[in-house]
Amino acid sequence: MSEEKTYPMTAEGRDKLQLELEDLIANQRPEITKRIQIARSYGDLSENSEYQSAKDEQAFVEGRIQTLKNMIDNAEIIDSNATAKDEVSLGKTVTFKELPNEEPETYAIVGSVEADPLAGKISNESPMANALIGKKVGETVAVPLPNGISIDVEIINVTK
Image (cartoon, rainbow, N blue to C red):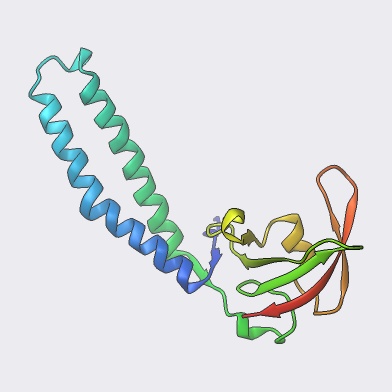
């Protein structure tokens, strides 16, 4: 028997997924149903692009609803208080700089479901986060890159 996959995430991340789920169920699903009914009224479904488009969108939305329900049901809420105050862990924000003289960068370390590097959130599964997790302020860490080399970064600050 296979064990259900868990999805590490912050409470904020779970709440965002819940809002998306509620929107899909309350707004998008009924809208698509209306579009399908209207498209059916046009007659011959075999050459009805509006009908096919709405059915395709319905399949996507229903799939997304199931995915969201699964992620929410199997969410593992991250407790950033479970580690030392200056230790990098899921749910914490870390500031580091590439050595020797790069500008500091700040990222929140979140579960893969919440990751959005452009918004300053990196997945705990990323090479950077993977290398930083468990380390403390002041430590220098070698971060392996996909091209086979590694970079050294110094952890400057960790916050919740």
